[in-house]
Image 1 (cartoon, rainbow, N blue to C red):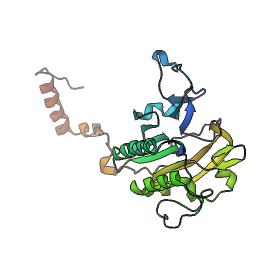
Image 2: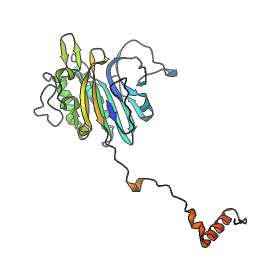
Image 3: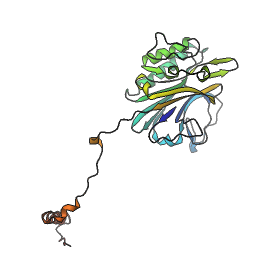
Image 4: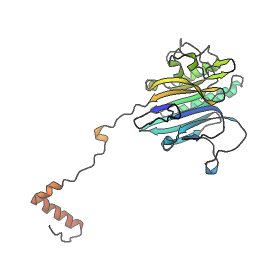
Length: 280
């Protein structure tokens, strides 16, 4: 996700990204000017363990100081809270169970995601980036309030769970609002399989802040999964003049008047404990 603000200078080594929510990835570090939020040992080194699939958030190093909170809910869900120019932004990363998994495991994932959303104050921005392992499908008849027309293929049960979640939480499926060539909508590509399972969601009230969303061809975060990029411009409310602290100026010119000068001497004498203040 690219966040545009008045102080933001894009990193030309990547397509102007600020944060990247990654789902099914191996536990490995990130290089360059990127910081990876995830399990580490003392000294900042990545914990070495058997390769296993987890979720995570990769953050531009210049925004690390903006991080207020990191919550690791489970192996499938985590959230990150940042403050950017006074705006609270929550980035949620998720990795839903695959189609062949038990229904109980799928329901547990959605229950965890519900709990994360319910813990975030209504006035704060939320962006969810996840491998939902489902197809919301092309077209939006009956679901116009939470998605656009530009999905891929037909909806399946797992995709319906994504749409139901969006309705519960009053969110929009960002990928589906932008008309792109299929090549820029397909998020999963393996052999002859081409489909859309990775989605970005945000509150419906903040959809106006999203100006673009597409798949970056040639970029990948995890094996067979292609990077989905969205451009978000935060609407920052300017402080009212009454809320801005104005530094008071000392009116030295008033000392040119004899009565003001004498009053100043008296107050200064009192402050110094009665010592005589000589006039120059």
